Amino acid sequence: MALRDAATICAGLVLLVAWEIGGLDLPLARLYGSAQGFVWRDHWLMGGVLHSGARALAWAWFGVLVIGLWWPLAFVRGLSRRERVWWLATTLLCVSLIPLLKRTSATSCPWSLAEFGTGLAQYVPHWVLGVRDGGPGGCFPSGHASSAFAFLTGWFALRDRSPVAAKRWLIVTVTVGLGLGWVQMMRGAHYLSHSLWTAWVCWTVAVLSFHLTRLWRTAARPSYFDFRKANDELD
Image: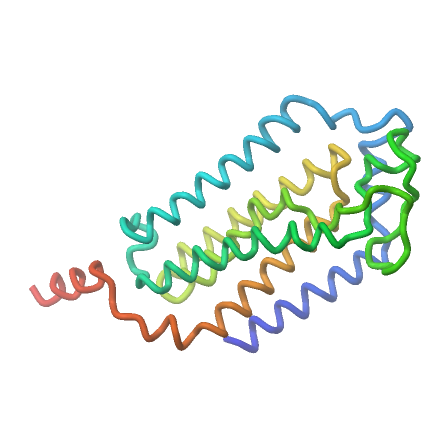
């Protein structure tokens, strides 16, 4: 399983490098931006519902995981207390790491480019280190996409105990994450690759955390629900 997880990290990195070589970011941004800026930037649906609203919903769902430490819902009842703690802590780590990476980035957002009439920056691929684009920077990777991709941890938490639930969780998480990434691209807040890199970072963090804590997690005692299930089977 560790080799398979490592392979997914490497495959994802190869695809991201191919995306960068293909130079797809700017052409996609031009679909929604012009010399007059990005028409969707301050739209109530994009900036309100799908940005602020989605972030609020993500924190609400994070709250469900917090509550689940003491009162597990149906989909986490098969997990031990330590597994639930791991799920919560690793999700929080992903959410916290992305903003830290953004603060060190020299890449500016698309809406800061002179080409789109709203700034002074010139396009410089974010992987070209040490070259400033003339803008404020601090735009790579996508923090908003982490509102969904941070929950990739659920795939690892659930896949051993409940493979069907894990697959459903993964499909929903990836779909929502890509949707939020596309919204941010439409608004000029990010290039699409910024969101793809966020997904890769969150996935990599989850893989490393999952395998590095394996002994700690598997040494956990069964939860109350495990005991109850065992007693029901004996009856």
